[in-house]
Image 1 (cartoon, rainbow, N blue to C red):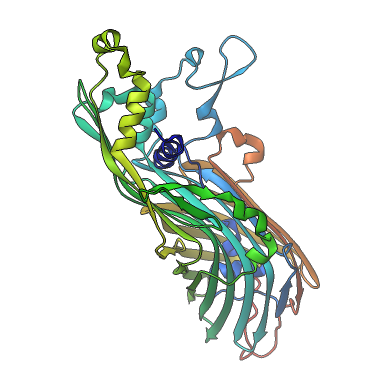
Image 2: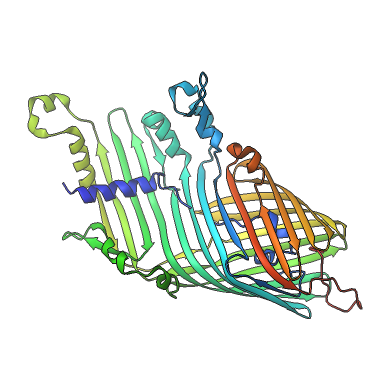
Length: 482
């Protein structure tokens, strides 16, 4: 019995059964309508920043982080002990928690996510009715989808699946890290229509992507059946080892000592292309509509590639204890099960390039101008995450009381949560601008009931931020989206 092989079989099964908590990027919803912050144009390339020129300081101009899921808050997992001053997990016998309530919070398809993004360099400038932007960004996005059947099996065992199949085929892992070079152009057509496009050249650093063709669990009164047909594609600086039989036998980690992290990050491997599209339109003086498609593109991974294929079927009909007692040569029952799993599943590896998407997002917004210093806005975001549509809805009030201060308060329905109150604050303009934005500022008050948290902070240099009031044929420099 090969211990290494068993470990990797178990690891891949665990990966696909949801215990590999992973990380897809979600830009701040609240940022979208704060176009005094130049980075808002990266959510819709049609939106022109209010300042004629901006320069994003390396790294500090834009740092975004987010983490969460679409189903659970901390209070769903951790409970207060009913009789003493301590905390216990919801599965603790003293928790008196109905497992059915836990399962009821789940969708058929659920997710965990994390994201991180920073701009190494960004700048933009206005030329008459056009606005040009450039960004050099580092991004890390990851996601994990898992089905409700997984948690039902974990909490109730196989009793819920007698004579039926628990379907795990919707499981998916997508971990991507890449560098982005973006060049955007926005142009005004008249005073009511603006169209923008951003082309992007991408270079991938690291990837792990699951193609789950099928995975299921079926049980009857006397038997258990497990099947798997899944591929895990990776692009990492590790060489896969292979047994004489041609099966996967782990990664050779000795090569890590020879890798310079800086040199590796600066490589231009695994090239991809992307595009962002945006439209801003004012059908009436007080109404603005906007639409954008972000991260439409791909990365082709062809460096340090390994394709791990887990494939097979396992049938378990129990252990004959009578035979075990009479004939002690049979061995330990657990060893028999492990040996059977080993013989049922194989892990083969190849080195074929693969392609991943970027997690295309669609934004639709509508804004009502109450005055030149205040507007009310709505924003919808939708994107597919591992073949699952994720929606978010945000309502915001945006105020610009004086030229050097912008404030926003928002309310979002997102990630299965209805208690997301966001805040945005922009201080200064020319020459320095500081901003802090969060969709879940309310987490500071009731973070135990929050399913996700994100924030974005940055410091920009900007010039030409005053609104011009010359002849009507001059380019419009908006104080907001209006």
